[in-house]
Image 1 (spheres, rainbow, N blue to C red):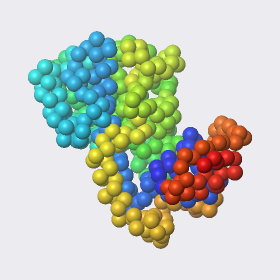
Image 2 (cartoon, rainbow, N blue to C red):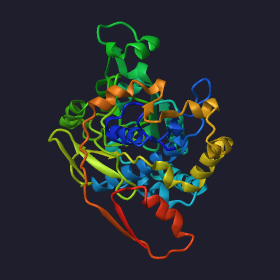
Image 3 (cartoon, rainbow, N blue to C red):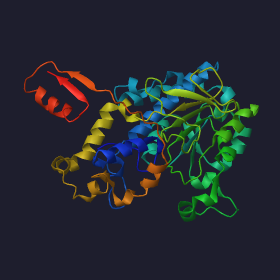
Length: 387
């Protein structure tokens, strides 16, 4: 039982799914525990949003300093340095006061934070961001606002732009956006995010749910086109990719970063990915285990959500539809709702290295504690056990 990141056919995890099938393991995915209306019941999304936004503000502050500009955001730390969300709130009040009193660097005004998605991830990110002084704006206002960039009102306030699909996709053959059509026939649409929104964005906070049948939010070429334009050198400085779909809605997001190395940089013009904060490139934060940076609140929330199903899980009783809906495979076969993953399994060409060497385990101690371990190790025919 885990977040398997397989049910959307993620190519990078098809080898894992293949192992579950090959070993006859029943795979229950937390992400698929939903009610009858499809609403998720056991989730970390909000906490991922909290941590992703905190880390994003921290990273942007560091990036601005590396470019030679002090800013109020330099006072933000990564999420894991705060004991709890109450401490985060205290720090945000401090940063908000500095923004109001001292202002933001003129060279990057106005500072536009663009949010994608409308789910728990984005709600969590907004809950953090909204504690800072800001104004909400619309896509139609962007050109006028940036043209008036030296307006004093942008000195002491951030700008928040919340966008949905109708703001950044258009029909390829013209005509108006139709939500139902877009969901059923996404191939009829293309993204214009790179033309309409990215050139005005300081930081992109990406929280959208994306599948491969939908157009990407931005391609690598889109990013390169923006980075080539000298007049946009203060735009697209950073991305908090909280969704963390590798090679997904953001084609150039190549891997998940880690808590101890949270940022990398993509220079799409030169086709270079690096970790030098002073070199050209958009800063990307793509940590895939963000809730672990807020362990106290995240663990309590997750435990409370899972508790109603704990007894059934312990007894192996999957008659509860919440649990049965969450099963991806069992007994070596994909469940009917996930049969389509067969084509993803066939298409995935991960590198698998067979190790034919026998393993040797030295077990110190032969008491009652050792017996379960011996039983477990003895299941593997390639393991020699010395007690």
